[in-house]
Every structure is written in C-alpha cells, then in structure tokens.
Length: 311
Image 1 (cartoon, rainbow, N blue to C red):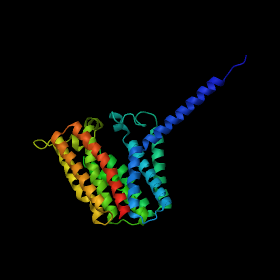
Image 2 (image 1 turned 90 degrees about the vertical axis):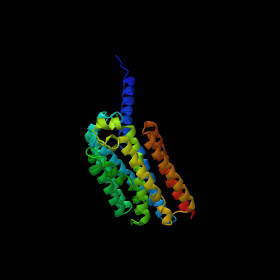
Image 3 (image 1 turned 135 degrees about the vertical axis):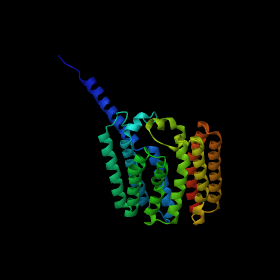
C-alpha cells in the first residue's frame, strides 16, 4: 500500500518555520527595539554634532551598530535579572522569559554575547574610549540600576545616567574625546528622562507595586506630601532644569537662533505639562506629559542637528 507523506511533511515544515519565526520574534523582543532605536538616534545626533564634514559614514555605521548591540545586550540582561518581577506585572508578564517563550539560559547567553560583541566591535572599529563608555553604560544599567530598583526610588536617577550616555558615545566616536558638547548632550538626555519616566511610573504604579518596586510614585510621607505631589515636584524640578541645559549647545557655538528659540519654546511646553500634572495628578495628565516627552526629544535633537549644519 502506497502512503502519501507529502501533507505531513508540509505541515511539519510549516510548523518548523512558524516556530523559528516565533523564536526570532522573541529574541528580537528581548532587545527592546523601541528603546534601542532611541539609543541609536541619540548616538547619531552626538556624532553629527561633533564630527567635521565630510562625515565618515562607515565610522558612523560602525558606531551605531556597536552601540545598538551593547544596548540590546543590556536590555536582555535586565530582563534576565527581573524575570520574577516581570512575571508579577501585567505590562511585562508576556515578555519572552516570564511567558516561557525563551528559557533563562537562552536569554542570558544571548545578552552576554550581544553585550560583549558590541563592546569588542566598538573597540575594533571605532575607538577604546567609545567602547569603554559602552561598557560603563551596560554595567551601570545591569549591575547597579536594575538591582537598585528593588530597594530604592533613587534608582530612577541612577538609571538616567546610562540612559544619557549614548550621545556621548556618538561624540567620542567622532573625536575620541569627551568635550563640553558631549556633556551638554548628556545633560539634555538626563534631565529629559526624569519627567518621562515618572509619567510612565505614575500610569503603571499599581503594576510596579505588584512587582515590588519602591518608586517615588508610590511613596508618601506621613503628614507630608502625597505620592502624587512628590512626583509632580520632581517632574517640575527636572523639566525646569532641562530648559537652561537644553540651550547649552547654543552657548557652546554648536547651534544658532533657530535651535535656541525652539529649545526654549519646547522646554516651556514640557514644563507647562509637568505643572499640569501637578494640578490634576491623574492618568490623563500623566499620559499627556508622556506624549509631550516622546515628541520633545527627537524634535529637539533634529532641530539641533539641522541648525548645527546651517551655521
């Protein structure tokens, strides 16, 4: 009797392809693509603002690739460490590790390979200073910020440091030195992150509470300000500090009037929405502030690069 095995083989092949696509998607998800895209964008801005024309496009590409690998490795290792807390929070429970789509061992190996390969690639194709900044970024994010999140609300400030280092890496890739402009870009990213993250933390504060994270958005002092008031105070403080820091590139001669006026106006808008959250202290105000913060950073950096090229 003849048996036709074509259909089972076809089904099996389709299943294998589907499984391979699913695992590839899971590994990609570990790298937090949206955050990595922001890292690449800020790194590119740092290079474009520091390098002299004509740009070395191969050097820029190598810088972006190596930085993206380091950022992806850090994001993956963060999820390895936070596997249990991720499983307790609704917004993270479906991540590859807590959902069971990838094992801890697979994710750990993937993260280590990405991080080490990214640092080696930067050292080989860019320079040692940029690779060192990449190593410091990964170490601070994975080994300081991530464990500190479970013990102190100050982790938010610590986490803003590695988050502000990618534009510095773009600058050092161009000139192999950390100059005043690199520090100005670091400052812009640092102060921008605080209202941005606090808005996210407010929106998901119940989830973070389930995860056991002692965030500022959950903390109140007996007889003192509520958690909402303390959060609003921090938002306003950092948004206000961002305004003078954001015009430092103009002071350093890296931009002209277009950027100066734009940064000032956008900074005031950012500050106004921070005040608005302080007045309302609700999810709608937090969501609006988050949206403003998401728009603010790419627009400010784009205007800075465009104005820099015009002067």
